[in-house]
Length: 399
Image 1 (cartoon, rainbow, N blue to C red):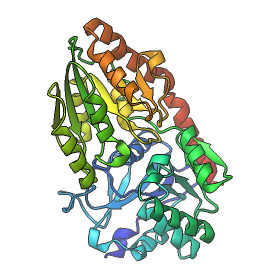
Image 2 (image 1 turned 90 degrees about the horizontal axis):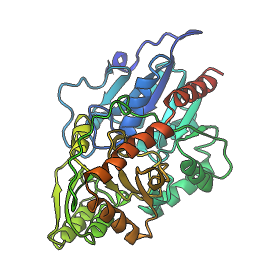
Image 3 (image 1 turned 60 degrees about the vertical axis):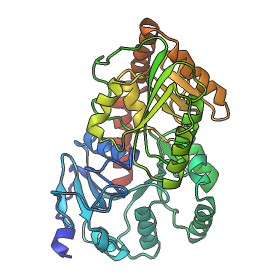
């Protein structure tokens, strides 16, 4: 691999934009990995006047066997607001990672996820003192939620015990995106000073009242947009839908991350009541999300845990109410006519919420569409959030 492609000249000064190295298993133009991609892209877009992200990622989308087309690999390329290094799959190694870190003088490092392959490799290199010492911020990104830890529980538990013994996560600056994520981190790692700043939304998420309202009494168009995996709880969604009376179209979008789980879903779909029509559409590129939402009445996502939930925000932003679990930051929705956040133990609560929407006419439902947008506008404080990120990065990376 050409060393000049790895090493990118970075000029540092007193008042220059902060240069931050970060890693993500998938990045744009990929979209199948969902939230983490949007979190980074939104950060780069909102803070472009203060930071410049250098993102190391794979050469393909999640689950794909072929690399992206029309992308230059194994060199730094400039996207809209960020620099990206697309690593060829066969050339990914801890040694390449070490070279990329050591040959550039970044202000600091931002880690995405506790259990990602990139994070673990970086922390091992750091612990062995094989890379330059840089101030490092780590964002759990939902890895420590109850739902996430319940999957492959034994392997994760063993790794976290060993990591604590080795002190891999010592000396980091911890950044949570919600109070629940902060509490999850405290449960696993004990006493830590944890800064809490919410994720930044997609730039267009608060624009206009351009939704379409064609809701008819006795009918409902329900949508699911997420990866098909246990943590997103699609099978639960199918089961609660099956108890609903009226005519329901349930449109499923998202990559299949767990084939066995999807097989279980398909088996259940084949036995569902005839008034519930289910269709799987495959993965949905981000640029088509808003259009699909505008044709839908409600987002159903009984997730086991979200530290943010970009798809929830995008639904609310275009006037689509949501029916979600109480394991996300978006709470008290029913009090604001924005939807429902329901404990997963309350299956009847989900069926009743869906039935309530089915039974609404156009005028009643319109209150929920306006309520969804109003709720998001009131709870999101984008300017304050941007200032909080900028302050944290400057304090961490220039001290």
